[in-house]
Length: 85
Image (tube, rainbow, N blue to C red; front, side, top):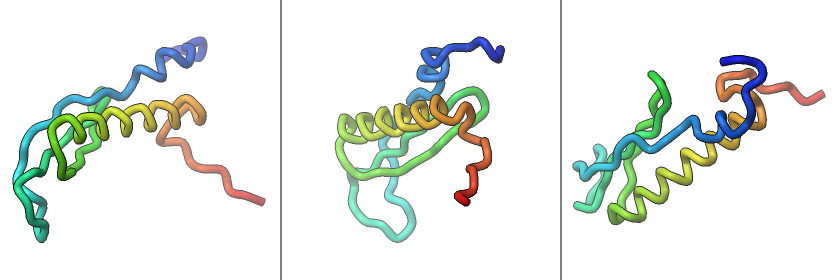
């Protein structure tokens, strides 16, 4: 990644990789659970959420957009946070 990279490249970084029907997580009930994967490169965020395929997919897209916005502001989602003085 070059230092001249613009924010549009960063904003398209995280994407929804998959959303698929799943069993409920341990201790949870219901038959409307989905597992979603958001990622870039070797990094993945895996989540479980009840709902319809459409609502869970939209949730995953929003989460990916939030990660992208955070990365655009700080330059890296792995950067340490500044301590308030």
